[in-house]
Image 1 (cartoon, rainbow, N blue to C red):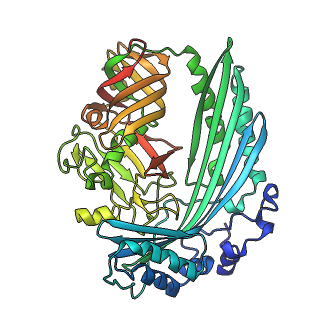
Image 2: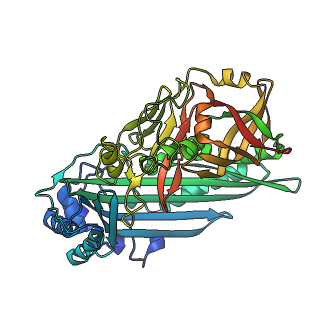
Amino acid sequence: MAKMTRRDFVKMGAMGLAAASVPGIFRGNPLMAFASPPPGEANLKDYYEYFGIDENIIRRVMAAALERGGDYCDVFFEHSTATDVILEDNAVNRAYTQVDYGVGIRVIEDEQTGYSFSEEMTPEAMIKAARTAANIAGESRTAAPASLNYHMIPDYYPIEMFWEDVGIDRKIPLLRRVNEKMLAEDKRVVKARIYFTDRSSHILVATSDGRIACDYRPMTRMFAMCTAEQNGRKEESFKHLGGRRGLEYYTPEKLDGLAGKAVGNTVALFDAVKPEGGEMEVVLASGSSGILLHEAIGHGLEADLNRKNMSIFSEKMNQPVAADFVTIVDDGTMKNYRGSLNVDDEANDTEKTYLVKDGILRSYMHDRISSRHYKVKPTGNGRRQSFRYPPIPRMRNTYMLAGPHTKEEIIKSVKKGLYTEMFTNGEVRIGAGDFTFYVKSGRLIEDGKLTRPVKDVNIIGNGPEVLRDIVMAADDLTVEEGGGTCGKGGQWAPVTDGLPTTKVLSITVGGVTA
């Protein structure tokens, strides 16, 4: 794509949004996206001019944040634009855009955090917010940094077509294609609903230890939801795709595959049964079953819960927690995945963090506060929902590496059990790891073979016990392409999960006799 000049970048910034760039459906709405170059084409001066700031203003804000003391402060600027389009009953019946713009200031003293934000970007408003955040500190003074050093970042989400440059007239045909394919896929399909979103964010974060970093973050998702009817009975299911990707991601093959999978997931439920309940061997399908790894185990490895002794893993560092073929990572470096980051929200480098390696617990997921507590370097897991929130340790792309077995070996090893394919709702006690998950779809395993489909099944267990009870893992690791959104501490963050086909020795299954 053509590269933008600095003048073009600044002209399209928050202080100079022009109605000519708004898709026709949004004309008259002053909230709109701005054109954004990929990392490396815009430099720090571009971001300063875009946000209407400079190094002197940032240092003045930091001085106010630290005037009552405080060991550290950071300043987080953000501008994000999101567009949503919904197609239902063969028509686009909702489309809207949202813009968020502001700055958050955090002050840390020991393990206390003071936080304030402002949607007004004048120096006076930012200094006022900084002094509010400073109130957690004592009277001893800490100086602002003498200078800020620009930190270069990698590009883990390269894209060709930026959402700010894509009018709604180019998005609607994507939804229509999926809608038409779903309705044509099976005569039992009576309704299709397509939900599409794209998001672009520019962030700039400066820290009192002298680092400043900028990032452009694209995001998109498409959900295909299907309702089918057979003999007066209706079933519903879905499939979704997405990641930190541009318009070019949605190829005809991708869209047709999305439609076919959504329909296939739905019509399979007509033949589904509810299994007998009780303790049994459970085989987790590769890919989307990774949500169990994320919820029941991953949260327990976030460092803030361990620092506060709220996690069952708090006293298990460098101890065995699983079989020696089990390795679990949290990876921010996967190209174009939903949970990937070029830099975290504290200006720390992202990385591929080995949480459990060869069955031994080796690391937690750290932000600045926890890394200082444990005297280790941050792992790049300091994340926030927006400038309105302070960063906390959060997962990125969390998955278990491939194991030494095959899927066929695993299935053949089960006399009577459950094969889980798709999870939906679930509840987890994060510290202890106790969970209940709703299995939307799966199959019975009988005499070493996949047989009848199942639905509406609950599985109940404990994450650390499940980790310990993993007895086989296949060589077919799949990281779920669409990813999800994780809630913690009142904040939401985009994440992705993955798993190879995995056999757990025993999980409680809620069935007809349970």
